[in-house]
Image (cartoon, rainbow, N blue to C red; front, side, top):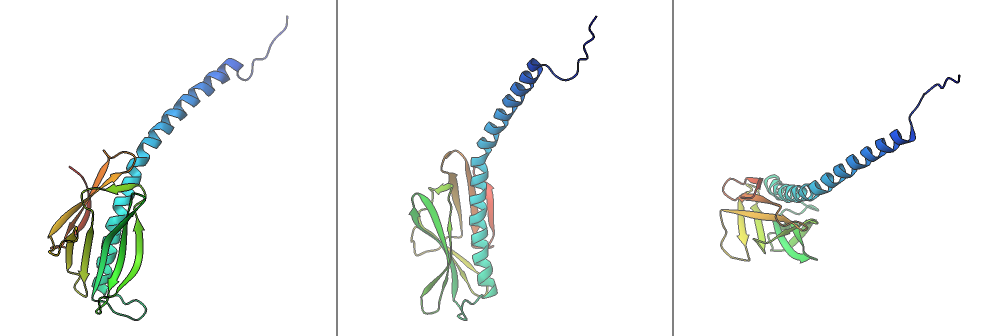
Length: 173
């Protein structure tokens, strides 16, 4: 009588385990990709918020660049680059000259509600003035609606107040 010592797994058990693992992996990958659009949108909204706050901080500190002082610090939307909005941080001198400090492209988003946005912060108090669509009169508050390029149903709003100087990223209604 032959005695068999059964140790290990059969080929059927291994194939079933691989099939279960493959199904679970594909479900996880689909969910990960689905959330990627939302993460990209949230990142772009945070980048815009941080750029506005950075411009405000430069004005409050009276930052000088290359030994030159400035009357205002400005962030404005520039021409679209292949559909991507680009924001430019700059400093406006007393003689009216503009020095570009930094460029901020929003790579995964589009902005439809405002075509031209310009926010000026006076030095040294940091008082803000918001100009929309090249209008000469400033507004007190505005909301920039940022939508994902791939899924426009996904949106975040950046609320800007010139009265309090507050900038917040909120969910759009």
